[in-house]
Structure formats: C-alpha cells, structure tokens
Amino acid sequence: MTIRDILKTAWTNLRRRPARTTLTSVGVAVGALTIVAMVSLGIGVQQAIRAQFEEIGLQNLQIQPREVERDEADLVDPTEPRPQPLTDADLARWRSMPGVTGAFGLVHVDSSMVILVRRPGSDVVARPLITGMDFELRDPFDPRPTALAGDLLPPKDGMLVISLEAAQAISLTGAPAELLGQPVQLLLETPRGDSQTFDFTIAGVSSHLNPAVALTAQDTAALKEWWFNTPDLFARRGYDEALVTTSGIEEARQMIEPLRAEGFEVQSVEILYSLTNRIFTMVQMMLGSVGGLALMVAALGVMNTLAMAIYERTREIGILKAVGASTRDIRRLFLIEAALIGMLGGAAGSLLGWLITLGLNQLIIANLEATELPPTGKIFVVTWWLVAGVIGFAMFISSAAGLLPAMRAARLEPVSALREGG
Image (tube, rainbow, N blue to C red; front, side, top):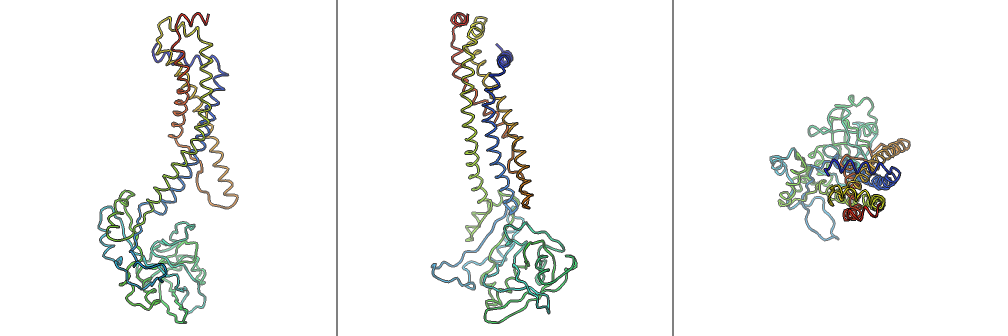
C-alpha cells in the first residue's frame, strides 16, 4: 500500500464512526486548549516584561567606581576621595571602543541636600527631584518623559530642563514654549542657616510627572561642592556613575568583563533580563505541563478507540493482509488514524484556545479602562509556533497512544483474522 492509499483508508475509517471520532478528538482538544491558554499567558507576560526592559535599555551599561572599603559601623564620608575616580578620560576611552554609541557621566545629588527651585525675586519655591541626563533617576512608574518644548537634556552648563509640574509649582505660567529662556534659581539651604543661589536658564520643558529639573553633571557637582564646602570635590571623587550605550545587546555583554577588569562595578539590565527570561521559561513549562497532563488523559481515549477498532475490523485487517498488505502497512494505518485524531483535536483546541484568549484580552482591557488604569497590551499572546507546537504535540501523543493497538493489529494472522471476523 502506498502512503496515499493508507491516508485515504485511515480518513475513511474515521469518517465511518463520526460520533466516536468526535468524542475522542474532543478529549484531545481540551488538552490542546489548556496548553494554548496556559502557555499564551506566559508568553504575554514575558513579552510585557521584555517591553519594560527594552524601555529601560537592554543595551545600556551602568558603571560605578568602587568605594573605599570600610566596616559597616563606619559612617560614609561623601567627600572622601575614591581610589579610582571615574573621569572624563574614562568616558572618552569608552566612546572610542567598538560598538559604543555614547558614554555619559552622572553626578548624584546627596540625600542630605536641601535644594529648592524658584523664580528670581519670588518667595514661591518647590523642592524638585534633581536628575541627571535624560531624567535617568525618574520615578519607575513614570513613563519616559518627552520634551514639551526645547531640549530634553541641558545643552550646556548654566542651563536646565524643568518639568511642567515644577514650573507650575513656582507659578511659571504659559505654554511650554513660552517658558524657554526664562531665568530660574536653585536655592540651597543648609541646616546651619547658610544659603546660596545658583542662576540657570530654562532650555527645555519636560513631561516628567513630578516636579523635577535636569542639570548637567558639572552643575550638579558645583551644587555638591558648595554644600560640602569642598571646592575640589569633583576632582577627588569624579563621576558617581556613567551610562554607556551600545549598538546592541551582544556588544554590551562583551564589554562587561573588560570594564570590570579596569576596576569598575558594572550593572547591565540584560543580565537581569536573562535571569528573568529563564524564570519565565520554567513558568511556561509548568503552565504547559497542566495542559500536557490533560492531553495524556485524552491519549487513553485514543488508545481505547483504536483498541475497539481492532475488534470491530478484525475481518477487514485479515482481508487487507490477504490481498497483499504488509505488517508494516497495517501498523502505519493505525498510527496514521491516531495521528489524524490528534491533528483534528489539536487544531480544534488551538482554535478554541485562540478565541478564548481573544475574549480574555478584551475583558482585561475593558476592566483596566473602567478602573482608569493604562492598558498593558495583550496578556494572552497566541503565536504561530505555539499553535504548530500544540498540534504537533497532540499528534505525537496520539500516535504514541496508538502504538500498542497498531502493533497488535499488525501481528494478526490473515487466516485467524478472517476466521475471527467471519
């Protein structure tokens, strides 16, 4: 028998008993539906997390200089010289490395510093969040800010980017474009009563949700030098952090060890993402195993269906063997029947699972909108490879379940089969 003949005969046999074939396929479909629903949930959550990581920047490296080792009981001296300061020379060297698209130094504001923003001559003040380049120290729940007017980064020393929230807090009114070029002051007040003002010009207005201003690293260093009364503070300690951007994840990964060999501490979002990705791979396997268990139960139904078919078609098997069908042909016939049941059940389960996840996604989005929360995209994501994998897995399980009945049918002797079926 050719493969075409075997396929045609297998399909005809399944159609002869539509009720039994349908019920057996339903069991397979339930298992396939469960796998699609469970795994699509894991895929959706994983994609949502990846989008968040990509928003932060998987190809970015955060580099920090090592501090002086001290006992836990010792107080940290924010003016203490670092053994290896992070300097402009380091930034220039990193910018020249292959795959690096930028290297920027940041100076952090000490938590003890009291900094207020105001208009010159005004008593209306606000305490803003002082940030570095691109508002990197933003609230993690605050979307990436955009420039409402002007620049998002201070173009040079003596200029700053102010959030619209901070501008309104100090009674700066008007459209964002009207705020460009206006003077503002940062006021530092120490606990001992000393104060100092620093004059700036607005170069940009940001959409940052909190009162915030962005300064250049040098201007931030000037604030710290006055606060700690250490004019050479930047020369003693250098940058507090550097952000190195690369052209891709692989380029960032290759730079980690060389930078650590230079004596710096390196943190990469990609490392955390890789760990998170491995965790979610395990979660997906656990979710998929629930559906796999249902599919294994359905395999018992496939085995029962084919076993009953042997008893009902004993004479037919004898005739096929008498007219020249080989043992291998009979075995293939029953295995293909089992695989067809798995294909029908897997396809039906995948279709139902896809329709159910579509409904669940719409329900979740509607619920988020009703509670005035921003939509987070699809929670359930059904991919083509998931559907193909589920159908293939259903066919494999069904074929494995049909192996014993197929071997039993193949072992029947033609004469005995004709006699028993007669």
